[in-house]
Image (tube, rainbow, N blue to C red):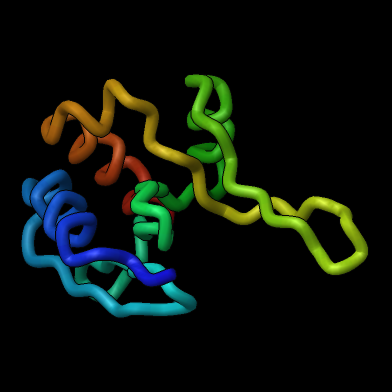
Length: 107
């Protein structure tokens, strides 16, 4: 499954306040970059995730954001440095932009 054009358009509109964005399709999803730095991705199922690093990842977890995990071949879970945007952020481009700026400040 690959990310849809509608999901890509929604994500780019959501983060429009960041400034010029570039994208690159990878592994069925889409990575979103600001000035060459990846800060978000769109999963193949349309979910939008924000990258967390250092203390910012603790902020995301503390705010109740769910981390992206995937199952390894041996059945164990592996955490990835991305968190799913909650509904309130998905519905508010200004809030999404604020969170994205915080992510970019730590990357």
